[in-house]
Amino acid sequence: MDKLSNLISQGSKSAPSYSPEEAQRITAKMRVDTYNSTDGQLTGYDCAKCKNRGSVAVLCEDSNGCYMQVRDCSCMKIRRCVWKMEKSGLREIIRGCTFDAFLCANHWQEAVKEKAVAYAANPSGWFLLCGQSGAGKTHLCTAICRKLLLEEHEVIYMPWRDDIAQIKALSLESEERHKRLQELKCKEILYIDDLFKNGKEKDGSALPTRADIDIAFEILNYRYNNHLLTIISTEKAPQELLDIDQAIGGRIAERAGEYLIHISPDKSKNYRLRNMISL
Image (tube, rainbow, N blue to C red):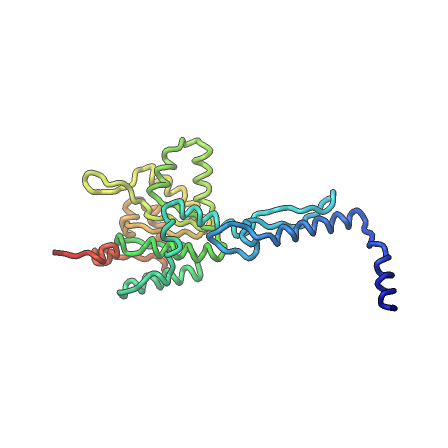
């Protein structure tokens, strides 16, 4: 009977009273908690922080009181970079381009992979992988980017031949051109794939134009001066880069330092020809 009396007594007590400010805070906090507990539908990267919504709610306060504000989750940097890389022709290989998937059958492959893994573990300066076509340059550079993306670094991918054509097609004074160049110049990490790979001339050469060189210098000189991480793959040898432009070649060599890796020309190193049969 005493227990029943206590329950009746407790039930008869009035609900706690809150000031308008307290009530506003509690309501806003409930909205934040409800939003952050809802599962999202984004795919391609599993984020425990936002439950794959791509955004998180935070409790804010100003002179008008407390309110909920929705902001991009940090994973959106990763998602945007992955989307960009996928749209730029790496859709089929970005998930497969891991260090584990790079199989080493020769000593030179082990040496190149070791350098790439070391750079990804402690990125500093620039990473240049140049030389023989089909030797796995794009695979290893993409593997570096993949690791850095998963560590929530901001990476932008520049497929040289495609992007340089698009940039040159824009007016020199256009806002779009300026915006694109600023993005390439200022992002935390830039990956240029196949630098200075241009269409073949009648004599078989593939030299970049003056416009190509000017754009490359604008991008790389800014990154050189501001010590921004830059990853570059190219079929050009170090001396060829210097021959194209002393300033560009010199800056790349200086910033890359120990991570300047040249795979010497040798068709036996072309992985794409591994299944070739000579008759």
